[in-house]
Image (cartoon, rainbow, N blue to C red):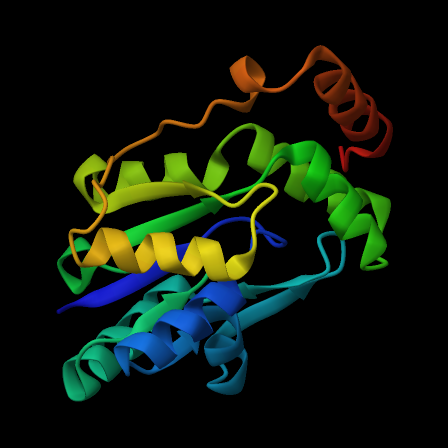
Length: 197
């Protein structure tokens, strides 16, 4: 088996799912952002987004070397697409109802601007689109984590990996066509009020 990517905006359950898969599959997991910071593969800290800017080329080289030495890994990151396609068995993009995500991120005490940025990214499928553009549609599987336990989401990922559940590749979740008008209005109002630009 190759590496497994777990992606999605913050609040979708990436880290928990990565840990559960790591335990089940007996594969090491790395959080790409933590790895970049610990190995000094960052360029700067962006105070407007409250996040580090990674040196993508150096990070890619370092993780590819790690993968070549260690073998299969589970990679937890909202930007797995910076890594080469040939590393991956599959990349799971965890999705969450933007209205649910909005409430969750606010409950974590995040700034309204940072919440708006991440909710907008989820609404617009940014993680999915970036992964498909860089890795190809045949590498990407979305899993809807809305209103579900993380155990259930992890079980779905495992079932897909072992062929016990069909894999549907590509971009399938379109929140604008799924959400109620009330939820869309709530999300749009919040984003408009708190947008960074």
